[in-house]
Structures are given as structure tokens and as C-alpha cells.
Length: 136
Image 1: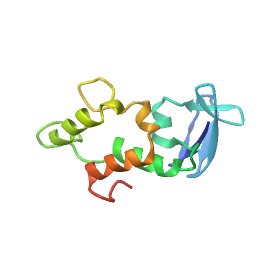
Image 2: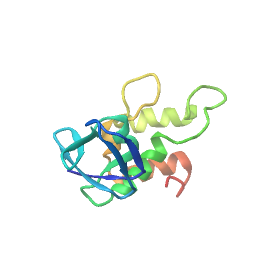
Image 3: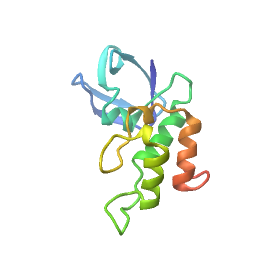
Image 4: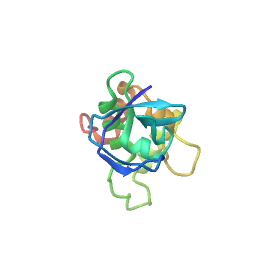
């Protein structure tokens, strides 16, 4: 499967090599690893994969990566009433309507399926969380 770098990745990969990928760099997978020239960059289910790379088999990886990053890693401040980045109303909506994208925990953590979701579903979620057109 093809992956694409949606944010600059300048880190040491799983193979111990130093990598510096620009946005738009295309990579492949071998087994459960994102690789470049047979050098393992990271696991497809790692935090690095979720933050820097997106599935690109439909040529919409940059869009998918931008949406998943905005939703899962947004820089919104914690709500003054709790320590979560999502309001109680947003948490309720996520747990009720998007449970298939969440890990079973006491706080919001998105699962592997979320990072591989179809663009339309991600955009719908982004619109609900950030307002129409603000998810990108």
C-alpha cells in the first residue's frame, strides 16, 4: 500500500536511519512498516505514522492526513471545565456517533480505522468539530 508524508518528517526511523521527508514524499509498506528503499521508517500503527503519514491508495492521502491531524492532534486548549481538548458535547457526539473510530478508554483516543477513513467521513467529523470548512 502507498503512504504519503503529509507533514515534514525529520526523525530517526525504526531502521536507525535519519530521514528528512518533505510533504508529498511517497512511501510504500512492507508487512506492517512504512518503508523507503527497504529501510523501515515506522510501523503503520505508530504515533509517527498517525502524525506524519497517510494512506494514499486513492491519491487523497494529503487531504486525509490534513484532516486526521486537525481532528486528532489539534492544538485546541483544554476545556476550562475538564482536562480534555473536546467539550462535553463534542465528547458525547464522538462517543455516540463515531465510536467505531475510538479506542475504548476514558478519554478520546482515535484508532487505526480513523486514520484510514474515507475523506467524506473525516470531513463530516471535522465540520462538526470545527465548523463548516475549518477542518483543513
